[in-house]
Amino acid sequence: MKIVVILNSLIHLFVFIIFPHYVLGQIIEEGKGIGELTLGIKESKTIEILGDNYQRRILNDYYELEYPDKHLIIGFDSGSIVNYILIK
Image (cartoon, rainbow, N blue to C red):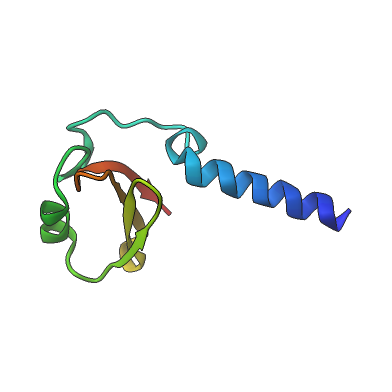
């Protein structure tokens, strides 16, 4: 029983990491977002808007800036363009 629960959790985590916008059930179009924070802007603009209090995570073909105090994770593509916005 414990193994099934653990496997289920790992599968959900994997799907969330690979397809976060599908798991959260909302796809934001380019140019839309939260105030000035929109999809399609550069990393430098994101840091200008949200500040320097972030943690950087480098993943396969993209990376994230996590703002724990703002409960946000911002995903960037290889060109440093905002690809997704997660609200925790």
